[in-house]
Image (cartoon, rainbow, N blue to C red; front, side):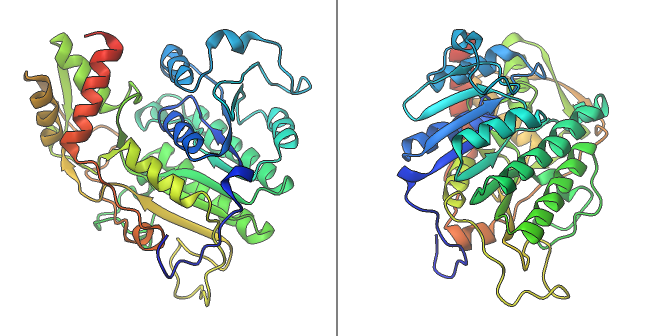
Length: 372
């Protein structure tokens, strides 16, 4: 954390109990591993839903020392909706809990008395929101409200939550700054993420709950979600199938390697925000507040053309993809580009993984995991 930051720090890591929601997810697994290495006591929860194959989620849990067989054991949260626990690594405990289940969350918070919470649980995916909008409201709105309420009533010192670059929607000004408007989302997913930021501010303002929102930009890497482009592209190329390239490949994405994302979260977690000194509602931007509330971009800060991303995958695989060029999909935006200067100033955040290095790690993991 750099000189000039306005953030205090939570007590010693050894005394910090962190809840990570979405722990069987892509970023969640990587973050749990990092926090455990840093010395935290970590409780992970996940509903293990069927948005994509559960086997991948269970294999992620294995990386945390949780065997699927342990999830069938009798629960011990007094019957409040908990579906089994696997202890996992030292200082890590997992529960199969859905954040939309208020009773189960209440029992979990009462038992553990968490110091900090990282909320990564969400219904993800822009295109799926066109098919099943209710799932996004249930998880990203109602579920997040449950998290906020539990943090408020159980004295959590700091809530860090995943927002998304999608909140910038139709904003054409680049690079995206936290000071920019987010009034025109292009998908329901984006709207629910914007709603989460607004709800967090209410709880910071009314109850003094310290909240930090992190707008993730196109995260990729080993153990990534199979509905995202790296997974889809690599699998199709290896199987000799055609990949779908939207907007003729004329799109820009701020691809960010998962280790760089986790590094940013780890830096923010022990530092709950304080009210902005001298904050003026007439002059200040929406990322700061008179309340203990902050929002930050977290990305690579270097947008990449989709065609260049595909070519980097082809180079690593040593073969070319068969391409089908299609128009822009509903809900998509032309580009994302993160201005991360605030995160860099306050926490010294600086991504270190180049695109080709990150793609190499992902491709090698994919070939090993799927045996191709």
